[in-house]
Image 1 (spheres, one colour):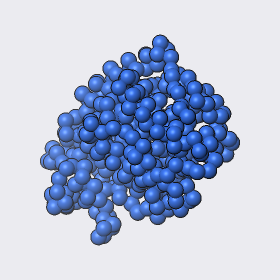
Image 2: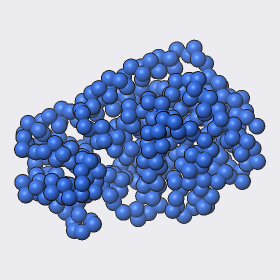
Image 3: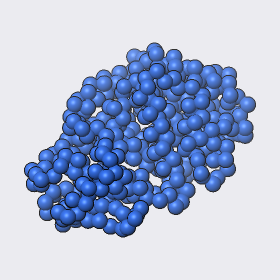
Length: 366
């Protein structure tokens, strides 16, 4: 069995989307202030971990998700574990993609799925990383309506072997956004795992973009667009595949959606970078005594809330001792407030200072 995917290479919408994305990604990258790449990469990762799970019906809202992801909160529920698992998977993906000789094979795809379902209590999680051996169906996470009937389980091993081989060929033959769209669609179409197929597919698509240098250095959060346009996302999948598995599929509708989503994600990142730079410059003008590391930490607090010493150290690429010294100094200056004790200690921006001095407020990242 072989899933044969094709698309209309002359489609004007796809080509316009590719052209827009290709040009804007360089512009956005140039706008990022030097030294702040890690800041935007972290925000994109947190946003992707939150929104990709939210697409599947995870009940935690964005503030709750960021408390766990960015602020080092405890995972006290399966919903929280889902967020942290995907964040860990994105970190592994970025590490693998940093080696451009990495090849995406069945082992990597299985590992992705295994990480996503680690520590979860349901039946699907017990079979994490294993191809399903029972029939499956895709239902809407909100309405519970049937959306798609995947192929029978006995076809899955051969379909996945061929899909992995095709992904390598697509990455050689097509621009990265098209290869990512085909791989994304292919995995959802085969639906090889008991659970986590959508999250695995979106992670796989992001890895292809990262491997081929189209992810704006890992600063894009495409899943945000897919969550915001969830009905359009599902319609594009359905318009291409239909309600039942087929071996020969024209995936033009989904490739068109994916390229539009990348354009929207790039535009959102550009807006965020411009806003960030304006707010950062204002902060530096009004608090000229700050070290550059402290500016980074404060901007992170403004956008994502209270942070721990380890998070500050990671964001500023400093040692734990330096991070603690920086934060203690900010407390003594009345810029931030220390809350909690021991491992639960967090530092947040003085709320009066945020309102009266910086004139800033939280906004969505990436």
